[in-house]
Structure formats: C-alpha cells, structure tokens
Length: 254
Image 1: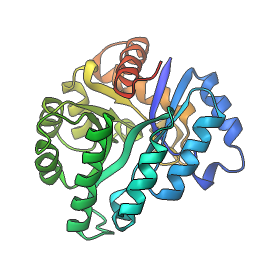
Image 2 (image 1 turned 90 degrees about the vertical axis):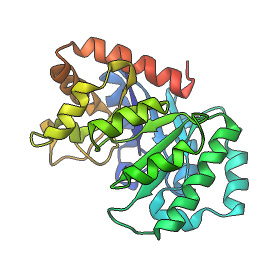
Image 3 (image 1 turned 180 degrees about the vertical axis):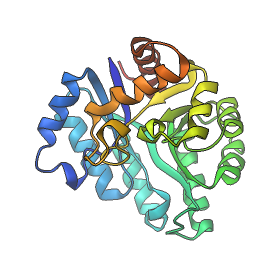
C-alpha cells in the first residue's frame, strides 16, 4: 500500500481523464491521495474531490506565490472549510525565493498567519520551500515545536533535513529524487531514517525519471518508493509500509 501525500488532481490537466487516473492509482496500490490546495478556488476543488472519492483527502492553504490572497475573509472561509473531516492539513504554504512572485515580506506574513491557524486547529502543515531554508527555519522555530508537518518535495541538504526533523517535521521526497544528477538529494535520502520519510508525486509535475516526458500522476508513486529502497538498500515493501504509517499518523487518517 502506498499513500501519495501531495498531489494536485484538481488541476485542469486531469479534467479529461481524472476518474481513470484515480483508478490507475488504486490499481498500483496507491490507496490514499492528499490533494493539496494553493489558492482559494483550488482548495474548494480539492475538497470536492475528497468528498467524491473514497481514499482521497484535501489540504487547504495559500501558496507563497499567491500570498496576497490571504486576507481576513480568506481565514474566515478556511475556518469553515476546516470543519470538513476530509481536510487533513494546512498547505501548501511557505516561502519561494526562487521565483519571488510575491514580495518576500508578504510571503513571510502569510506563512506565519497560516502556521498560527494550523496550531489553533491542531493540524499539520505542508511546507513549500525554494531557496528559503534560513527563513523557513527561523519562522517555524518561533512556534517552539507546537507545529508539526511536512517539508514537501524536499530539495534542500542534509543539515536542513536534520534541523527540520528536530523541529518535528517529516521529509517528503518526490519525483526529482529519481533524477540521475540529483546527487545531493540522493545523499540526503540515504541519511534520513525511514521513520521520518514520506513519498509524494506532486502530480501533474515532477514526473519520475522512468516516465519523463509524460504528465505525472499518482500511479507513478511506486517509482519514488523504489528509488528510496535502492538508496537505502531495502525493499519497496518496507518503504511502502513505513511511509504509509508515517502518512497516516501525520494526517490522522484511518
């Protein structure tokens, strides 16, 4: 059994065959998928999918690119949406200093506000981090381990992974782990204990190496598990079992 802890099946790129995509995932033993929102409309769509399909869940949040969407009204909407039992996390939230589509101060304000919401609601957070390691750690450290969550699509280094784990976070690896030149990421995956690892597709993006050129989807999740197994000299079965246990615990799903 596998759990895709981060997907975007609500994306328009799945409009023509979404039902088949979900069926293919289940055929590959991907029993649960968390569809992650990044703007208001996207959050509504993620919840609708979760309500319509068994094994699907939703996460709601404002992505750093869309930080200006986080208003007092947005927070009111989120508090109502969080009453839905299929909403299992706040995210994706965080900082993106690579593309800088929102001013950094606006990003930081939106990030802290949503972290506070997660603490208030006792929910994990799904963190997007691009070239913002220092500020990510600085901000989550303010919450003195009262926050828990996931470093989504991990692309940082070993020291950052260790500090994140010390603060109560799990490390989630995506399709970029399978790329031949991702040597630093390979070394990080080797260093992280399986009890702190999750796997995700981030579909429709970051297609694993074996399927490069195709739209990514949850049925490709086993390729990521296989890469972790190869790097850690263990079986796909063990990777599937432990990462699924980690996902169930962090998201509090049956």
